[in-house]
Length: 235
Image 1 (cartoon, one colour):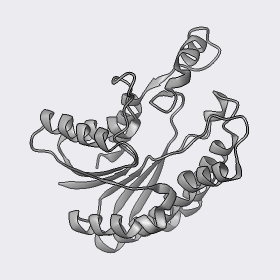
Image 2 (cartoon, helix red, strand yellow):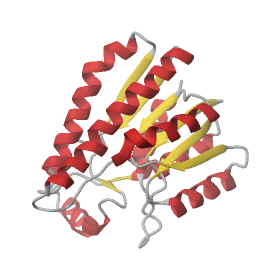
Image 3 (cartoon, one colour):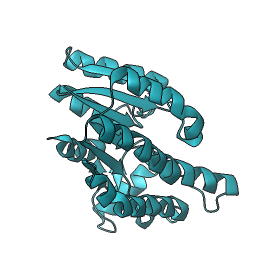
Image 4 (cartoon, one colour):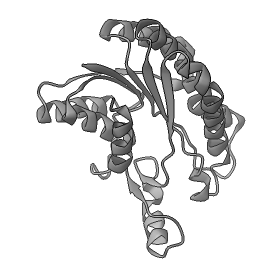
């Protein structure tokens, strides 16, 4: 059974339970297939993580799912606990970084800019190096998938820092693709367009109206993006 590590799952809207995060939908999707032992991390959504495990296991009682809290903002200090858990359950065959941070403000403070860059670029780059090394040494193969949309700024005027941070992550991945390929590790990028998740729900009516009037692209569901990622997880 393959082992999958997902950073960033468990989120679900408190206003509308039908609105889930991409990571949440991905855990549900992989659990239904039952081919993978899953460890996922959450940040603030501890209850959401517990409910996610219950839902997934009720559909497939044979699936193996566990979760732990991980703060991407403090990734260097958080890494030892994550490394210990990874050692406990086994080095993943597939590593997915789905965490992200964005602020809907016209002008970000310096701290908010730094936090955006930390979660969207510095943390995933750090984890790719750490976990990729483990994959290469222990399995001599593996797959790393990052969700990194640089087109979010087309849908909102205040996301320049978010897009810049994701753009740096994309650049990092492309610059290191060959290095990891030589060690048996494939790195892939999934770049969602406008997607219904808890992250955009405060402007969801606006986005839906714009899509109906064809002022912007159609809105994808988190389930659709999760399905695309799940297909990339197949051998």
